[in-house]
Length: 449
Ligand SMILES: *Cc1c(COP(=O)(O)O)cnc(C)c1O
Image (cartoon, rainbow, N blue to C red; front, side):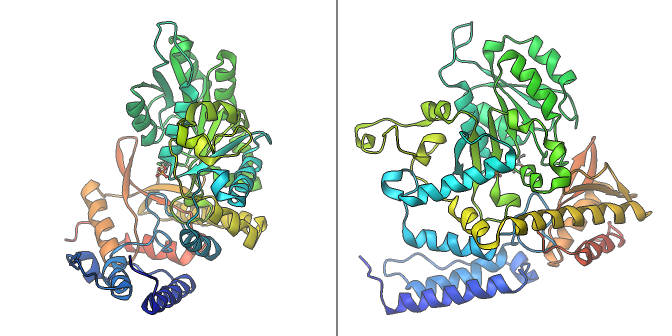
């Protein structure tokens, strides 16, 4: 096998330098050639090209084609702007070859991830006994929570509970989880309704409670940023003994901002919560947390059993593998911990508040522009709006042109059956000037080729 040689060291130095430059200069959008051109990849050969040439291919041919999620005008989907400390930790974590599934192997790395989960619990208003783990994304977190919610239960009809009740604005991954689990979905409310007791009550009343896996509410809907009426929903669930899962993958971070905390009242009553640090808590992809009010239930659902695992399946051990649909895992909570350790929680509050303030600026500016139409009051850091006179094709063309010119990444969405543009602010380095540049570009005719 190949040994680490002098040329690897040179490659490593070159990567380190590249990372340092990448983190100290504004992220660049792909240049037009890189977007249009068909990337020609080098062949995979018997002899190999050596680490330096392989790194050069990645750096010069591959990476320049991707639109970095921390670009100041990446406002599509939900971006992610990792801190330098989080990136460095993530890189070093690979080199350290930490098996993050069990305490036996990972040592104090497990304590670090526990501290990161505990910090999230404090943020969410969860009790000290709450615990969970970090998984690849909100999708895996939601699936893991729902599997735990169903574990060990049977409905009066004999089989396991088979219905997942969700609000109208639940993320697509909840449906995906239901499909994987062989469950059906019942939607409470319609359109972009915020989930309220008045939607949930009649739905739950019509169902056999033993057949309901869980109710899924959103704390920051992906499309609109809206937060379901969590206190009402929690009360409905508690009165029936129904598991409540709150998906705060995107929005949970806003609980750092004192002015927004009240919107989340009731989240602390959830049986499980999803929150994605890779969205708005400044870690690299991937890092999402699933947290349970009663971690023992989750462990019963998720711990794998085999003779070769007897050595780690000690009830006193805190094994991150036990809380989700995974076994081997990256200790992906470590970059979150290192970043908070490095910069302190005040910096986190400040960064989240800055995103919220930029979103508020964008909403205000849209309201003041006769050519633009704010579609609904800003919720968290999502802004939905229309360009007067534009149709779906105009939005698509503008979005495409904006991307290939390297100006920004903004994609259209739909609201109440109408095409809209959607801005999502999760990067504290996005400035008012960035917003201005994008909005001003909308003044150009949309129907230009
Ligand atoms: C993004 C998102 C998810 C999915 O998370 P991934 O990390 O993309 O798997 C789930 N729920 C909500 C509310 C989201 O915004």
